[in-house]
Amino acid sequence: MENIINDEPREFCGLFGIANRKQASWLTYLGLYALQHRGQEACGIAVNNAGHLSVHKGMGLVNDVFNHDLLLKLKGDMAVGHVRYSTTGSSVIKNAQPLLVDYAKGSSCIAHNGNLINSLFLRKELEKSGSIFQTTTDSEIIIHLMAKAKSRKLEDSLIYALKRIKGAYSLVMMSNDTLIAVRDPLGFRPLSLGRIGNSWCVASETCAFDLVGAKLVRDVQPGEIVLIKKGGIKSLRPVELQVKDRSSFCTFEHVYFSRPDSVIFGENVHAARRRFGEQLAREHPVEADYVVPVPDSGFSAALGYAQESAIPLEMGIIRNHYVGRTFIQPVQDTRDLGVRVKFNLLHDILRGKRIIIVDDSIVRGTTSKIRVRNLRKAGVKEVHLRISCPPHRFPCFYGIDFHQPSELIANKYGSLEKIRKYLGVDSLGYLSLDGMLSCLKYPKDRYCSACWTGKYPAKWKKGEGKFSLEMHCCGQGEIKVCKK
Image (tube, rainbow, N blue to C red; front, side, top):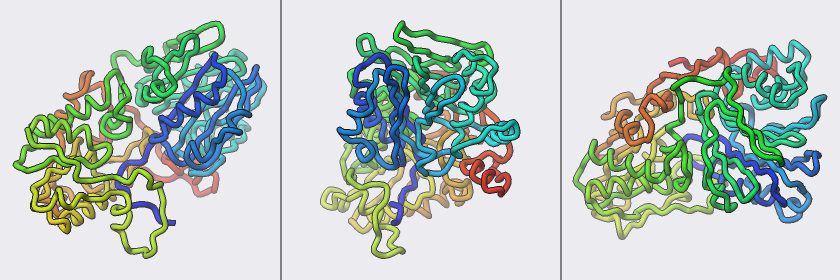
């Protein structure tokens, strides 16, 4: 089984939770369906039936893991769901979420989007004090810290744990009687609060609310804990979790990850991407016959580029939406087969034309190079590539699984001209950092841009990385991470 050639950054995770609603599992299933783009390796739903918690998890897509009969068995009026792409811990069933545990303070489950940057340090400390771990995911650390807290009150135990962990985390949790939503002090990851009548729900993206018929109420604020019970909703803002006049919203949510119909960090994703395209056209104009988006995440920026440049938008590349993450290649060295399976060209439309290809990002550049080669074979006269974000040069420690820095095309080839030659395009233009950030709602210093600048808003512990907990468990010691 060979991976489809895919240079895009890997997704993180998607969260959904709902309280005070009959057939909560069904609505959670729909919510996860809307969030499938955020994680395609594993998924799970935990339910609360009169104080009794149970969970079903599996490897694969939501529709593969759940069916009608399973959902009927997941009874309860409160539920938590998770779709996963592994950013810490291997892609195996034991690391699938939500994680459900029974301990002295009751039952609890947790679903996590993000990445802790001190997980190895905390795990070693907990193991020395007698904790026994069942997974190699950083999310389990939070449960162990809650168990260590002296107080038996849920909110006190949670605050104790949150004071110890560092990094990016949006959490949806559930106890025997409470649904809990948490966002880290810098707000790296999105998390929103919605309502359906007397029922409350939370989700990583608002597109999940649209599918289940909920209305967006507001974002869960950075450093906020929201507790939802049958009696109502309660917000906590512990002093220890507050960072005055600072945030680090992940800019890449707007560039690539989020669905265009979602409202993220207070603004519509499609509108933000369209502004990226408009700014890109101002920064890198070129004469051409058509603006052609790379589907699907490049469409909004391409629309903005076309409108600003007054060059017609044309659908010259068609995506096959029924291709999974893997497929069998008959010959190992047919590297362009993955690209041709996933994307097809409209030869009659593109032949003899000068085109501007608009894409959201380039990571390794392999897919882009093959695509350009196929465009040349199709008879395209000129290929001008425009990217709606700056060049990626640095790893992300907050939940995005980028390639190693040495594999990133911006590091490997250095100059814009060398990248252009490698890709085989007539011209190449990236959106500038200032230009990108100027298109967003909040001041520039409210967003995380570490993958472009190397300026990390939260410092990580030495040895932390995606597989550091596996390395630790196997007795192979710490692994080194790039500090560029």
